[in-house]
Image 1 (cartoon, rainbow, N blue to C red):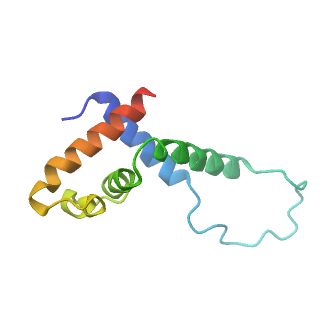
Image 2: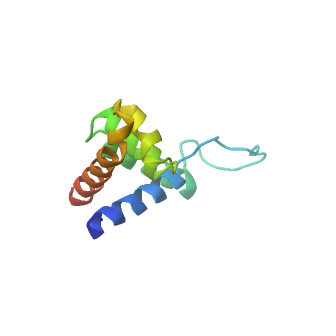
Length: 110
């Protein structure tokens, strides 16, 4: 349905979303000896993922990006994802197919 580069972009987005911090650190860092300002490799990956997603999301209208996220990241149906675009229910599948293809293809070619 979508060009191969579009599918690769969606997979890349899934990896970036997975690398983002969600809840923060769940355990204390007792006795951790690290110079101030030093970051672990995990913190660098999280920061890079956050920055890359910020850049990608800035390329598209916020409602379109949110609908894309809802479908690609959250696994929502086209009908549910289209709520961010205020699309009539009967047009949700076609609109979301266009949004998914457009965002994934444009992001892949940047």
